[in-house]
Amino acid sequence: HAQAVMPQALPRWERELGVVRTDWTRQEIMEVYHTPFIDLVHKAATVHRMYNDPTMVQRCTLLSIKTGGCPETCNYCSQSTSWSKSTGLKAEKLMSVDDVYEAAMRAKKSGSTRFCMGAAWRGPSQVGERQWDRVLAMVKKVRSLGMEVCTTLGMLTPEQARELREAGLTAYNHNLDTSPEYYNKVTSSRKYEDRLDTLEAVREAGISVCAGGIIGLGEGEADRVGLIHQLATLPAHPESVPINRLVAVKGTPFEGHEAPSGLDLVRCIATARVVMPRTVVRLSAGRLDLSVADQALAFMAGAHSLFDG
Image (cartoon, rainbow, N blue to C red):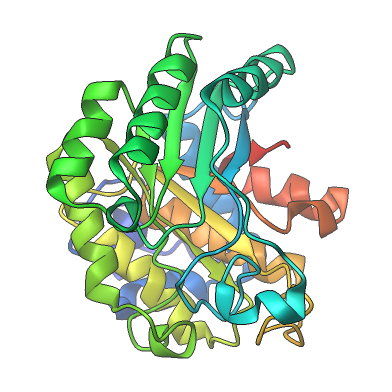
C-alpha cells in the first residue's frame, strides 16, 4: 500500500510549482533537470497549462537581413569572417527596406505573427548611420503590418536600444549561448558581461528581452543548468527563451560536434518551463532534424513557438 508523500517532504520548487521567482539556486535547477524524464515532462506540462493555452503555438519567421562578414569568432557560426574561407560563405550587403517588407508580408500570409531580423554584426556601432537608419526603417515598416518585430543585431548601447524602441521594436534577441564558465570555449571576441550589458540596455529601454542558448557546443549538463540559472536569475525573466540545438556547419571549428538527442533538448525545454513559468520557450534551430515525436514532446514539455522559414 503506497503512502502519499507529505507536502513538507517535497523540495521548494515542487511545493511552489508554477510560482514565478528569480531567486533560483543552481542546485535547485540541477534537481529539476535531473527529475526522471516522464515526471519532468508532466510537471512542465502542468506549469505550461497554468499560463498558456496548450493548443496554441506561435509561428515565427527569421530573416537574415545582412549575411556574413561578422568580425566575431563564435566557433559554431558560419557568419564569421574567421572561417569564411572554409565555409565558403561570402559577405552580403544589408538588404533594402522594400525587400524586407515583401518578405514580412509573405511571412504574415503564411501564418507567422512574429518577424525576426538578424544582421551578422558585432553591433550597430560597427556600421555607419545610413545602415542603422535603414534597420530602424525596416522595424517601422514591418510593425505597420501588425506583426511582432524582433531583431538580433549584436551588442547595443542604451541609446541604440531606445531608438529601436521608438521605431516600434517588440523584442530584441541576444543569446547567452551557454553558461558563464563555458563561454570562452565558444568565442574569444567578447565577454559574457558584454551580453548581459546588452540585455540590460534592452530591458531598460522597455523592449521585450529574448535570450536563450544552444545545446551541443560540447558543454556538460552543468553548463546547460548554468545557462538556465543565468536566465532565471536576471532581474526579470526574459519574455522569450529560444532553445537551439546545434546545427554543425562544415568549415566552422565546431563542425565535428554531434547534435544532442531530441530527449536532451526536451529535458532542457522542460527545465526552462518549470523554472520560468511565464516565458515563451521557443523551439528554434535544429528543429527540422528532430522526429515528429520529439517535436511533439517538446511542445508537451512547454515549448509554444517554432521558427518557420
